[in-house]
Length: 146
Image 1: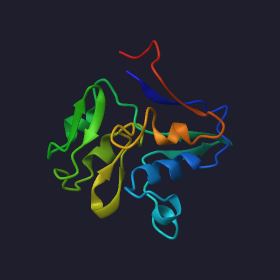
Image 2: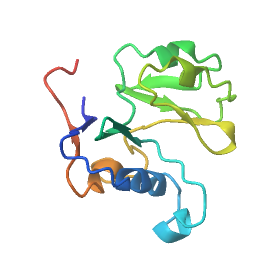
Image 3: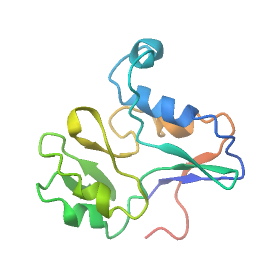
Image 4: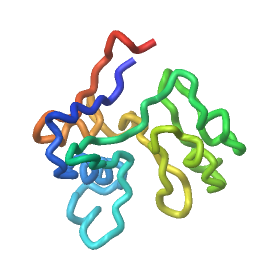
């Protein structure tokens, strides 16, 4: 299965992946209208550790503990992608607590959010990958995927 991988040696910490992600998931057709002077809720975050920057997003684990811990059944695996049914999420935030990668966050209205690979709002590849100017994010299938 294709996944988003971070190539930290190329990441310059520009946060454009975050803005492209937030815009792609905003439902708006104009980036300025969607993001200017508003809280931004990206499903990917840029982290810095000892002067190394890298993007962090859902790894779509083979045996996802977030799905197992979801008491409302809002999280499920569909074709290898961990998806959120926003109508079922009760905002208990258990999935945030159990994710070992910190890839689940609280979004608008208390509902959780995470990368869903832009399956509903992109053409061919996730918006974060498409908008990365330095190709620090790649969307590909690797040999270690199951």
